[in-house]
Length: 79
Length: 316
Image 1: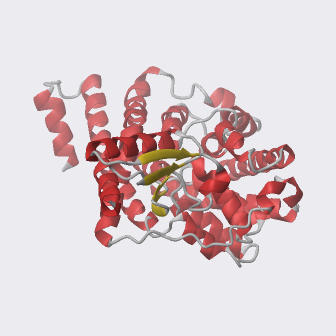
Image 2: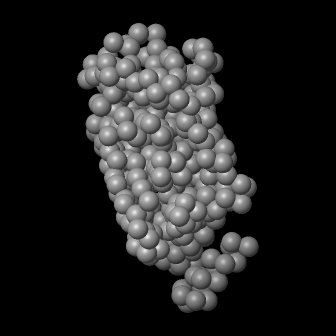
């Protein structure tokens, strides 16, 4: 599974990345978590960061951040 | 009800004596703390539900094809209800330009967004009453609308970084669908998140209100910066511009300033200067705007905020 965290780099984006990594670890699934900071790449999906893209599909964008459980749920739905 | 609760804390739990200065201060502190946190939770929650209906993608759709003026008014209003992290200022700006939204309209949005904010609204309401709150919202909107119109009239498109115009995604972003239950959850998370970030500032603000009351002479600042001093407003604004804080952080300061006799217009102007113009935001916007445009933006904002300060000193 391919997971991307989109955000140019601010505390919120950083938190989103940590959250996603934690969710993947706790679910114990095989997935890569990439941080995307390039604005062109980000804008292929959304204009509100931080955002979460799973297997090429936009799953969350903007503030406030989803909770850990919500992130797990989003990931589980794509397994 | 709140009175009973704060009386219980002050006189029964803490066993303070009726009528003493300390008891009054503590009572006031507890009463205001409970009142403001209740107000904050309720209002942030309601605003978060409203916000869940206005993601930036939808705001973009509403604003595209809008003419100047009507567009500026709408943009200023949407700036209040559209949630966005300062880190998305750049993609948002590019998205707006790509959608054909005029530069001035985009600026109306970017100005009103940090300036008219729900935390400021609640705190002003809780500490100063509805009249000041209404004035604050009204002037914030005015500054955003007219600031945007002026920037639009100046035709500064050439000072936007060229690459912004070369973006052609052409695709409409999908808006993630939410059920009402999810919106409630979103509102709950949002409220908790905001309260977590600002509770300390608020306690400080209320504490200042309760305690400096008796210790610094009432008209300490009036002599230097009261209504009579014509330079009070520009000086307050010029001090406020390089300072950067969110609305919650600046409220303790303005509360103290007002207690000590600074006039309302001067205080509101100071607050607007601190929240609406910030170096971190400028650095983020530098990625899409060239320095002359940033300068014009800062200049117009400073001038409009000073004008607002004078206006309110004159009418209040």
